[in-house]
Image (tube, rainbow, N blue to C red; front, top):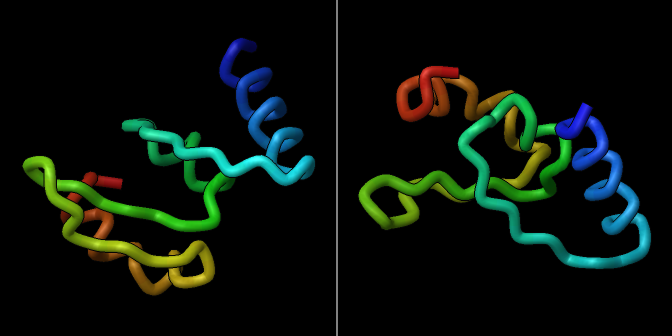
Length: 67
């Protein structure tokens, strides 16, 4: 229930024009809320892409995140 409330609040803030930087390990939770993705490894950004590119990045994400 807390996770659902958090997701609803993030969507509401985005609709109101706020920019949100979210650092989240739970990709399945964060993915539907994001416009852009950054994958970090050992403190460095190793991949960056827009939400529209997500389908083509699934294999790479599986390698990094196991999702």
